[in-house]
Image (tube, rainbow, N blue to C red; front, side):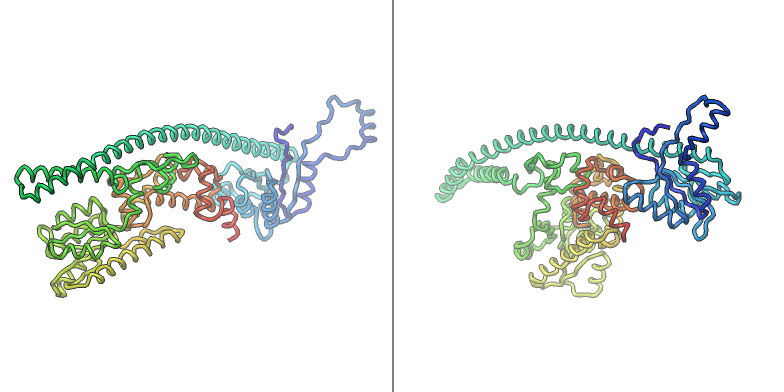
Length: 556
């Protein structure tokens, strides 16, 4: 038989009987030719009609026990010269053949195995129960026919080589598809760059026009001030002043929206080395490296923590805002109903609320926030002048994180806010350090844990979907992109893209150690389309390449 592959087939014989090994030598090796005997045979019986065909070349290794067979299998893998077929005796002292085959397959699952037995006490059902249903397992009865053994080895070796060739062809096809996909993504990136440049031109035009309005508005306002100084104020002047100030305010908003707004931020500069939009969304890249659709989240990450102050005392509220202003942004609303609406829309980092509020008091506001999955993570501090045990009990039962009696020092309030955010920060750091993610370990309450569990389940269900990204996750959770970003940022300490990428990388590490999948197969199974990019971020996260991670796990 002519082998298509240039490698010599390697066969391993595992048997405790030396005579069996001698028999296999006779099966696979050509006998020494005796020229004198052949000449006598030719004289007696005549010249043979067909010239004898030499057997194909095989490399035969012997092991006298199951443990020795396992050692030789390990050595063959380390040397990069795997066995194609293993003939294993079913009855051997210490470790029987079934166990030996199972442990050999654990090292190299591609080996074609033949169980050699002279007994009928092992049924096929028993073998299947212990080794599982497999097309890599055959049975050879002793005493075996040499031709039968030779044909088994020939057929199974060729099957092994054909399977390997098919795997190589499949990997080549994957690489070809990846290359073509990359070309499409490059084209898409160029189109995105062009669109970005056009948008930048529009923004520059708007900025320049807005600046041109400044001088005329300054002149108009100056004239109005002079008229006001001459005490010529009337209804028309008041209307003119009001509308002029409004126009001035709009101009300032146009000029500052590019740096401070969350909705109208420009696209970030596009790098030729940056990820494509599809890769960035599917692999969980940071918001700084993705297109304009996520730059509002990037700006929010860089902002100071947002405090929602729900306070109807107009004398007290400015003092609280001033006390927090060096380190925090504050938004003021005057009743509990507005506070609830604003909290659901903006998801602030902390809510500070007066207990005695109109429409919806602080206790009810706190309860509604804590019972809403979207806002349950927000720390709530209640302020009250009622120094009673029942009032504190109501606040705690509503889920308040802190309860401060008036009068209080602003430094105390700020310290309480600092401590709440620091505690949440420590939970976020825990999420980054542990290998196994448990929602209860990073959540501050049951609602948060349930939300994180939903996010994890959705990511795991769509793990292999290359198009699964922040947009799809938000849609499945029935929240907006901004709400999802702020919610997950507060509950887990990272952006949704980072959260998705972390889960995918941890699943990849699990598959590396618990499955027989190749790195290429795992790359696609966890939702990445670029093998090179996957290896890069895997190394960045775990400190080693996927291959080194697998080697390290085997030695532990």
